[in-house]
Image: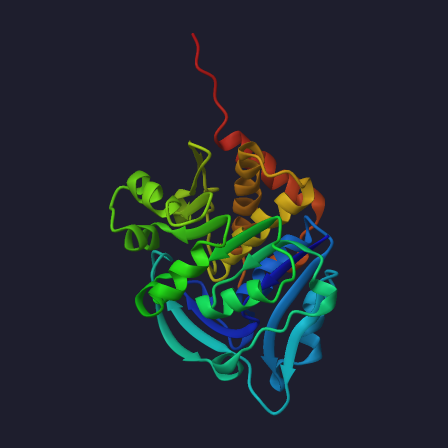
Length: 306
């Protein structure tokens, strides 16, 4: 049974207080796919790139065993490109350029070989494309995870409400949770959002960790304190990939496993920010990941007593 991820496969150009890059490989599906590939071995991507993307860049994904049959390559066209500059706090950024290119008229193709999809991650794209992907699967997956952002809340509210009714897990940041719910308290925000359709909600809080809501419970996951954060781009996508990758690996959707999945997602995201772009995510192995998980465990482990 496969884990299918739909999202952008793109070029980024990034500037942070630690340096800047020219065009490097990025995109939500790229980061999520790389993260998931360390935990599950049937990862399949749906996306679109231009002729400029090149086999070398696609081989970054293929080298991790990721299936690219669902990735369209548009001859004579350019790939999606985003450029941004991060402020000193690394939590806020300015978008310098967004060039949709092949993404402007992206129509997702779901190959027949993807119809065994049991786990589906709908990466941050238009809610209409997310819905189309669901429509083109012959069977509803065992687990559907949706990532979205404030931009779609602003311009595609009705479509977003429709797709939310069809997903199991929603992952957004704290500002987006407040916008989506109209509530400042994240607990109240979660109550409202869970009434919109998802069974579980993850609210990402960057350097302050993440909150998981569902099954009447709340779980607070820490973020790993890092001395240096080079590039936060893609961290949320790596989180989502690690999260769904872990659940695909264990195969049982309990609140306990959801909590563990949040920790694995947080661990993959913590690697992502240590270098620019996908560089750090590309060089991991099982031992390194397990050591990072142990660090997360120690962070929040305590006993109360005399």
